[in-house]
Image 1 (tube, helix red, strand yellow):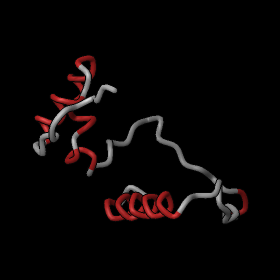
Image 2 (tube, rainbow, N blue to C red):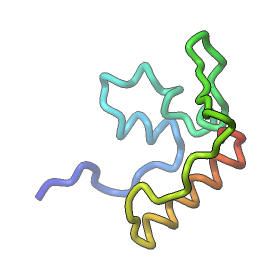
Image 3 (cartoon, rainbow, N blue to C red):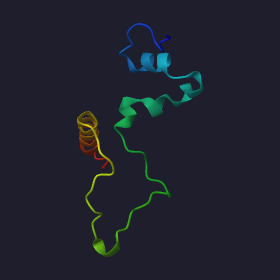
Image 4 (tube, rainbow, N blue to C red):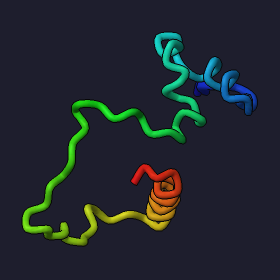
Length: 87
């Protein structure tokens, strides 16, 4: 059995990126940056809105069932995105 990485991964973001990201993606460091992920991209001409008919709200329902772990991770992700103002 082979492993992708042996030993502990670096904690420095640049070192981690250099170690785990394939060479073909090295020019895209900013895409993987945690600091850059805290910022929204600039508005573009192809930004769009979702217009609801007659100011209706979409129905509240689950798309699919999630395990307790998945639900916990989803809530963590949503809280993170809300705190950044992304959603």
